[in-house]
Each structure stands twice: as C-alpha cells, then as structure tokens.
Image (tube, rainbow, N blue to C red; front, side, top):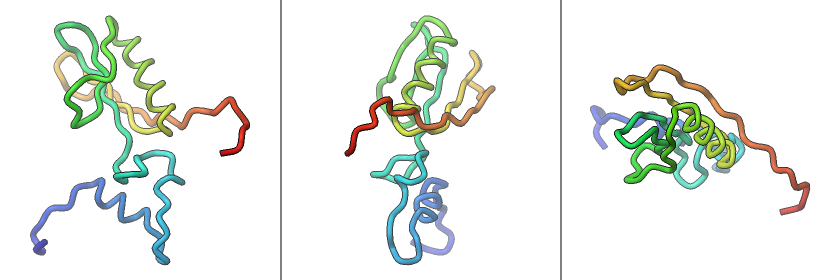
Amino acid sequence: MGPDALVAPWDLIALSWFLQDGQHRASDSGNGCAMTGRPNTRDVSKRDDGWAVTKPGAERASALLPTQAAAVARAKEILANEGGGELRVRGKNGQVREQNTVPPGRDPKKSKG
C-alpha cells in the first residue's frame, strides 16, 4: 500500500483496538464486530414495500416493517442483541436525519460461559 492510499475508517478503529503487547480487545468495546473489527451499524430507510432495517453491505434487509417507528424499534433490538452499535435513520429522501448509539443489551441469565 503506497503513501497515497486511503484507509477506511473501520480499519483505523480496528487498529486502535490492538494493545501494544498485541492483545486484541475488540470484544471489550461492545460496539463492533469482533471478527472484522468494523463498527456494528444498522440503517432504517424507506422502500416501496415498507421501512427496511439493513446492515451496510448486506444484500437483504434484516427486517421489513410497515412503519418507521416499528423499524427503528427492531433495529435497536438487533443492535442491542449484537453488543450495541450505531443506528442511522434515513428520511424518505434517503438523507440521514438521525443517528444514535445503541448500548449493548442486558443478558437476563446470570449463567457462566
């Protein structure tokens, strides 16, 4: 990679998750994918058949709901179950009109492992 190469923001985040001794701590952040180091993100956007919850880069929607409020609630649930992340709500024109950080969900079981 030459000096003029662009670096994706998630690559910088992934690099910052490595400690000096080489231990990986992406899972400690609770706000990204431990496998790729990319932030966990969901978009809510309008489609002809309803409001879609999508993960950037995915071919299919995670959920398709009749109202924006229902889609936002489902996106928050998905993000919480996956350790938290960023939720972007897009208006009918496709522009991001709201962005929120969703904290990790709480595991009701106090079991080990």
